[in-house]
Length: 76
Image 1: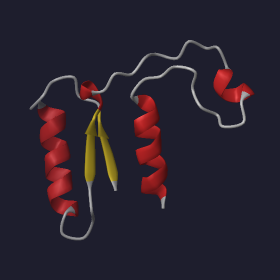
Image 2 (image 1 turned 45 degrees about the horizontal axis):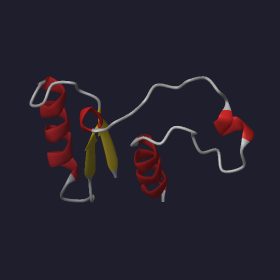
Image 3 (image 1 turned 120 degrees about the vertical axis):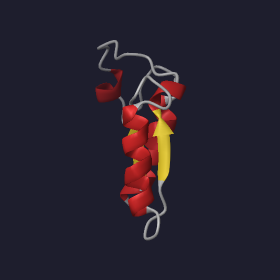
């Protein structure tokens, strides 16, 4: 299971809620938390490159590609 935490503040309310949620899931599930604040993610440029190529990959080389991989693995 993958949880994306979007809180900009480390140790803030969102982090506390994520930790409580994970604590409830942990006995039965393998959980990975990705803090988006720790990732280098560029905003969409609207170039539509991802729609024009077969792999649907973004032209920008940032940490979002790593998150997409984690999301794809979490679906299985």
